[in-house]
Image (cartoon, rainbow, N blue to C red; front, side):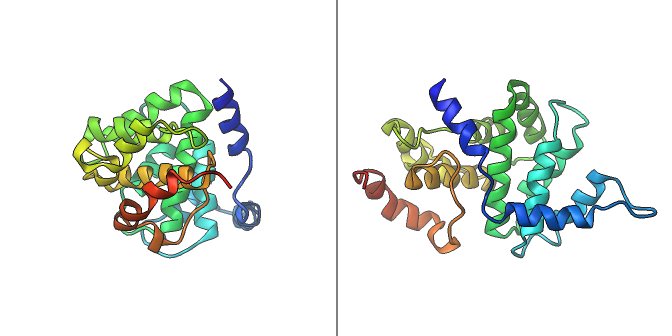
Length: 216
């Protein structure tokens, strides 16, 4: 219970640039004659052609879609938009990080959201049920960043144990990197990190020792 309270409090703290990005997005969504609906406009902000570059507005749209997504397991348009983007090959690393953060917040808001995300992802991920199960487990905070279970850290890293980091589905890999960032930063909601430090090779080589380093 204490862990969940700490995690919920962390999600209440928005990323530094999110307030400004939401302000820009709000201006774009101001009512105009013939303007599309909110979900359609947000969907345009996360169009697959636009996500390959860094964009605060795109990240804001990702968080807004997650906020709008309800518990429906079918016909959940906002959640489907996010799942489509999650499985888009060409994503800027900041967009990928925002997606995992937003979906982690989504499943943490209400218990039925876990089942809804699982149902949507089974139709989107390469490994279907197995991939969806892995992503949901990672999105729910697979490890406690302040008191990590060594066995779970091993499951993230060790290829011999079917590591999430080496999963064949890029979405599961992304969620595993998010958990490792949380461990490295000792934060329930980690900051995005330069892509050079997000490579699997770098994580496998450097991070086990860093995770075992004493707190400063």
